Image (cartoon, rainbow, N blue to C red):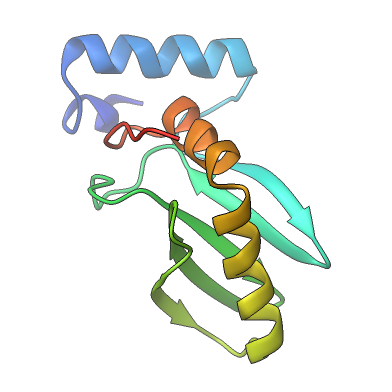
Amino acid sequence: MDELKAFLSEEEYKSVMELAQIMMMPDPTQFVELARQDGVRFIVHSNEKCGHNKAHVHIELGDAEYVLSIPEGEVLTGSGKISKFKLKQAQKYVKDNSAFFADGWNNYTNGIKISA
């Protein structure tokens, strides 16, 4: 928990800890699964070391993991094999549900706040 203090102001740290307590998460550095569609998991990490400079959601399917921007659904990074069809579906899902993903981002991460 102390490693969070290096990345957050005291006020931000208190907010994260309160949110973690509300959600009953044992450690606010964990992830939150926002959705699951056709086997694809849509996840936000509450405290990545990158500092969350761009709103994004991780998608996971098997060993593959891609990072899609919120609200556009643009691929930011990716590794592993996922079919083009599944990737396009996931991108469309993020774009079509951008308000939901923006809310999830704003509520569960230490990153910049975005509007829905």
